[in-house]
Length: 387
Ligand SMILES: NC(=O)c1ccc[n+]([C@@H]2O[C@H](COP(=O)([O-])OP(=O)(O)OC[C@H]3O[C@@H](n4cnc5c(N)ncnc54)[C@H](O)[C@@H]3O)[C@@H](O)[C@H]2O)c1
Image (cartoon, rainbow, N blue to C red; front, side, top):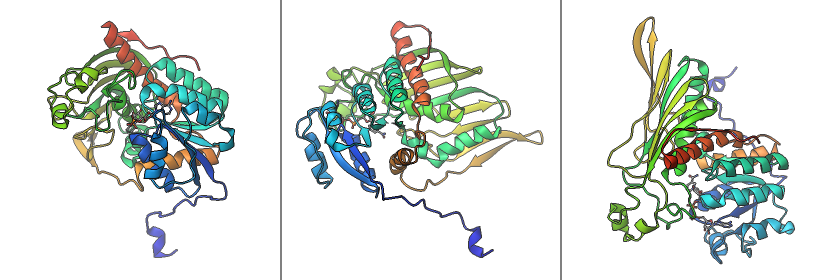
């Protein structure tokens, strides 16, 4: 045994380049830029096609990233997916929320593996339809939750699964931004026709996944939800003023704040709130309370679904109350690259989706329940559709 045997395992997985995966991108806007940058780092990927509803946008997108020989002369995702000559293995769907379900279903029906951006869909019914298409196709569908790749997120799950917390009975999750309505590239995030959901879907899905993934995604049973849009609909909202876009207020058709009280299977209560804008620094840390211990996960200043600092485990040792700091762990590699790589590996190894739709369906069920409860002003039952 040599001294090197004590070193941290530095093993890097080698990528088999003998089989190249043929990839297309549907929707060539802001987030597609992160997808293409990560695909370009993969030695076993050929980017062969791209489509956008806006004429010329896909062509300009690939030129910007210096990618040649990409077919882009398609008027919609359908035309691209109908082009048999492409022999697509996979697509990244980077369209706005209202255009998640349609392209995902169409791609799966064409036998193409799908990496679908978050949130899964706008409604629970749409998510169920995508799951059914996935089941029928036998292809891989992974939902684009890159925070899942973070070692700190994995640590939360490890702590829960270790039993250190005992039986979990109460969870508080969510996050917020003081002024963070996402309009740097236009209004697709804030218009009902394109986004369908505001902070609730955009960043709420991450807060829910942070805790639900850790506790094994129990089924949601009932929800009492609230949503509002006081900042987004105000032409005097400071960021609209700063960027010279007071007209965005009239276009704002989604929520900028949501809150909910959710009952989960197993007698667990989930207390949730999320904000794109608020007059507050943070709506609080995420906490997971258990009969043996509780975990505090600090929030971030501008919520994006990640762990904001060292976590604290509150527990007893020999009958004495104590607390243990869980230091921030370093993730090897960029989260976005890992999101893309794990998707590609699942395709090549006939594996399972890194972020499976069967879990995110339950995440979507809560989001959908909050929206429906807020609209009717009372608690609603959550019924998970049969897939
Ligand atoms: N994972 C992340 O960190 C992250 C970050 C930002 C956005 N997103 C998600 O990515 C999605 C897109 O966001 P964005 O900021 O890139 O939006 P965007 O408006 O900049 O880009 C979306 C593009 O999709 C195109 N499009 C819509 N429907 C289409 C269709 N059927 N066929 C072809 N093109 C179509 C639009 O014309 C537009 O160019 C959203 O759902 C958002 O929630 C994820």
